[in-house]
Image (tube, rainbow, N blue to C red; front, side, top):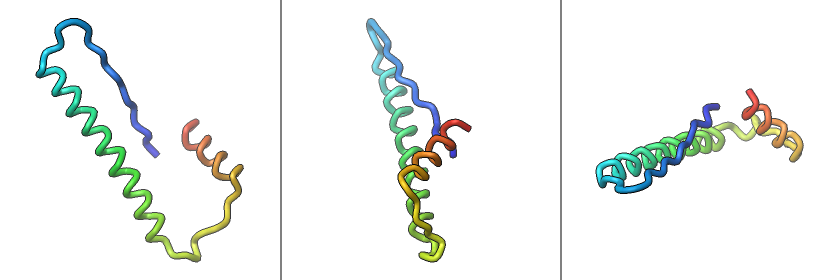
Length: 71
């Protein structure tokens, strides 16, 4: 799963309105893409047949999360 990279840029001094708009639009695009990925995951989960669900412990979920981020 791609978790993307987020970068915050601070420009000191006289920041032009154009560069501010570009940064704002890029942040909005990144947030929209992240939301779309999350929405797709949730829709896939709810579309799965109930028989495909299996119980997981908190340790299972934490381990899966760590595996996704480490690899």
